[in-house]
Length: 512
Image 1 (tube, one colour):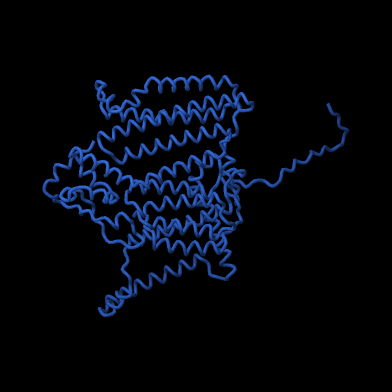
Image 2 (spheres, rainbow, N blue to C red):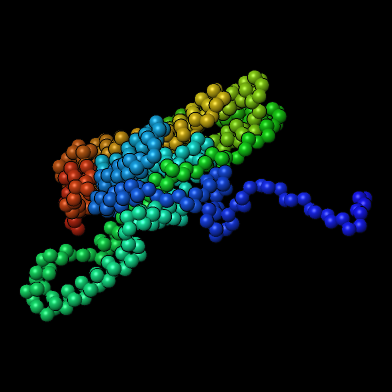
């Protein structure tokens, strides 16, 4: 026990100096993101050049892009956004960013060339992912998944950044406050509308002159164009903000797990490898038996063989990727023996998984040959091809014992698979194969072909003239150049009508 002399005053030690306190919720600089991931810059203001270019680009985008129409407008909008973002950036794009922009614009070019709505939507969704991953950056799986979600966390940051930039620019120029400008403009519009309407009602000649100089204004068109203006402006400002204050999404990646002892992960993986090898060996005749196996197996139809088997094997492929992700995380790779074991067991699993992917594709191909090609069947084959490429990439990463490049490679493989699907013009392929079937069997579902886009028109030239009139299309009105689509522009298919030519009714049946 410490004894103190009477009258002696005890002075407590000063608190430790840990630096300035972090902002609390509601204070400038506070953010829901950890500071190590994405610190807030409460005083940062958008440069005047960025604001000016963003507004002008948004005006051009409003005039040239209609999101509701798959057309060249998507490509034009992409070029405008990337040009405005990187044209005002404080640095030049890196090689990775150039590659990301090229892939994004290639995806946005598909709606300008092909008219298939489902394909255009998939390419636009993929362009959203590649575009934001390009702007956000990052090399980990965490960055790849979180990158396309970052825009939804940007509105408050970008709004404050742009507002401070506009206020700073106005003070430098001595310009009036933006709020007062809006109020004055609104009052002027109301005065013009009220008094102009009264004068027009009072004199027919003045009403004619006023109508000549006043453009026809559709409320729905005005609202749509305002919406496009806001979208383009928000995309450019968000991109400009990210290039100056990028988040460090790689810092959110989970820390490396504590490696397990070799037998703890190798035994379950070896058991799974043995199961895959047994399945491939025993079921070889089933997987690759083709038409003969289907016809010789009692109670087994093409639909049961392909549909059920395909989706089961697709589930096997997805679960295998999950198993590989867990193994890579927990397997020790410190010694040469550890690395050899990882290479051997992971290599066997990847190799047998590729065989499973091939068998799934084979099943679906047999089904298409029996019942005809369709959009969904061709799309799932593309997904399986992409999964096969992913297994090859995982195997390559295992051989090199370096997977830092793997997330981007998987994303690029998916984009390449989608662009490859677009390059073969999938709906024309579907039409060609169904026409081949018609020429062999005389069976054709003209109703299904009529539901496809003008992409199939070149294939229809192989049909007899009378039969070609049975495949119709929706009416397409003349379009402006910024609504151009190549397939729609060259389509000469008959327009859909209530009365079909004689003899067409037998070719309209329920398609399985």
